[in-house]
Length: 245
Image (tube, rainbow, N blue to C red; front, side):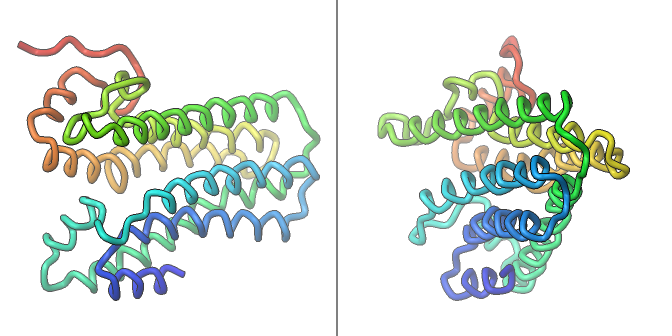
């Protein structure tokens, strides 16, 4: 699927398909895991909530905003930056995405094969998923409504949750990964599940998420975004900073 997505990108000179396929294939992986797993009914069924419903929401959100006439600024910049080796680099990028999809599908496999009975920690895990889902949905909705208002064109979204974090959607994407270790307490691989929130944090802060997003915002919004950076937390939701003089 990643190679097919790369071929689509090559034909249309439009790499946004990478995000669509990323979320869609995690949904497919979740359905396959649900079908093949041998865990108890609760831990198998929860796969239909995470990752299936979780990433199905993201998949649909990305499909809705997909615009073949305009490539996302992140990918447009990479296309310009890579220049002559563009397609070779994009191929490696797409294949790398496929490997990451497999990496982040593994916790679902562990969860779906958990044979422990429903307990208190499962309830806590469901609560974490619920809060995280609400946070991501609200963040995306606030940003979408802000962008729909034509008077906000070129401005920085600093309303709602975006007033307290420059990336509240990424923050709640991160918090939902704590559900996996909570839902697998007692499993022999449960210790491994605690590593995943840390891996996701590194990805978001240092690799695929926030760095590209911040760079693109600085290119497109300039000083307005620099001002936003000065008084708004980068990732964790919290009080606004006092602006430096």
